[in-house]
Each structure stands twice: as C-alpha cells, then as structure tokens.
Length: 76
Figure 1 (tube, rainbow, N blue to C red):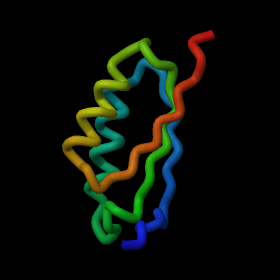
Figure 2 (cartoon, one colour):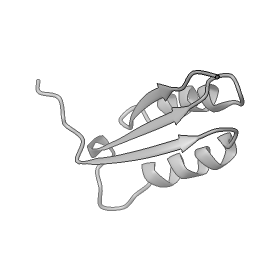
Figure 3 (cartoon, one colour):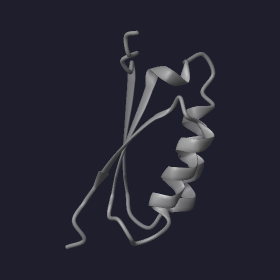
C-alpha cells in the first residue's frame, strides 16, 4: 500500500528537557480532530545529555502511528 504522508510537521529542538518533551509529545499525540498518522514530529537534540533517546523509544512504543524523526546534534 501507499504510505500516508504527514499533513502536519512539528519541529522540536531540545536539550535537557526530557520531562517537558514527554508532555509535549503526549499533547500532540492526543490532538482532537487530527489523525495521528498525519503528524510527524522532528526532534533535534544532543544525544547522551539526558533521557531524550529513551523517552523517544518509549513514545514510539506507546504511539506507533506517530511518526517521530530523530535529528541528533554533535555533542560539541
């Protein structure tokens, strides 16, 4: 079948705000009137500074239809 292209893209740049990121991602996933399959979330972050990577893994498991694109920055 054909892949559903996202209708909405959300860009989040975050460093050391994993708890706030979790609240934002849940809020986006629970939007009323927008199918979750039409949303993509681009998350730019520095790996290893906090629990962002683990959070993104758990959100992908909790909301498999939500498209999360990871854009890691170099630590320097």
